[in-house]
Length: 405
Image (cartoon, rainbow, N blue to C red; front, top):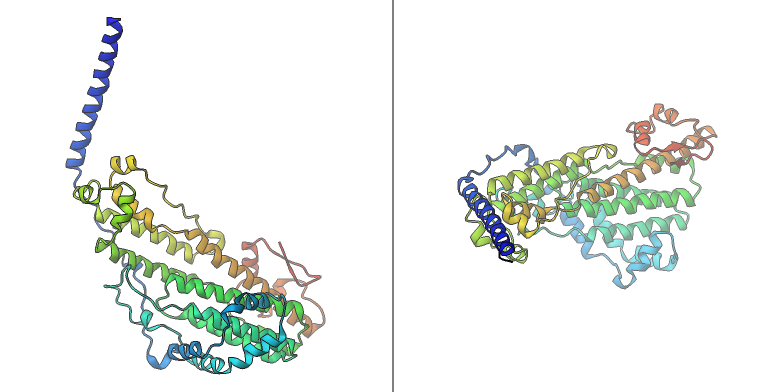
């Protein structure tokens, strides 16, 4: 019995001694590991600012359009269903068109300007903008476009096809002007993607439901604008990077959130081992470099963004810059989903472009084109349609003029 106790005690001493030595070496490592990283040059991540004068900005007019907008909130679902081509109520559509004439006037006035930019976006000070920066919401853009889309379908229903096509031209130009505006915030890009999705759905609905004349198809083809959101997304992520960078530089991390994750900020931030601001800044730079590069890539070249794994309590205690790595986790969002939205719109745009071009060709020559190369050579597209079809593994059906996958 005494021999057993002796062996147990001996084993305990060995384990304790090894643990104590490890603890001492670890504390020494923390004490001497005091160097922070050298900050990376991030000049390439600074957004390219545009100067927009009042004379070329349609913001005041679009705000007037908002003030005169008639949009019965209690019928939001009805409006959405009608846009999708379901449960069409012609009397209600007529009501929306008639009661929104003033809104239409100021909307058209805004389209005469080169840009439509909120003053909160135009007057950004990159040295001061941070997480507390308040931007003016552009969510009302979606309601305006929904009403105008109801107007489009109403005009087609009433046999005024060219009027409906002209309305399509206007909301397409509206979306394009938003995309071309300066300093877009990520939420603005999302809103515009939603708008463009509504526009492309309206185009597809009209093409499927109505037999259009050559003149009408030519007008639709002329009005087509391809918006791929690459530049605006890249610009939005650069701006978001500046926001996060300035917030970090002011040490505006959320102490409550970190305490909820069992981090003693006051104690741990005193050690450069646990908290390395410059290393954290470099991690942030790398993170946003990747999403900016993905935003500029073709859809088949996008690299999957892997979100950092959740860091447990012991990991934060034992690994270098545990606080910094937790902060990077806090900023991580589902960037893959952003690129998915962008690519889905590119896909819809491609399909509508091909359908319009093939129908226009048939109206001129009495038959569908035998290949997309014929359409491309005749100048029906502003981009290489063959290459874009390959991205989505799509094929053109010469018998129907439709796209198959």
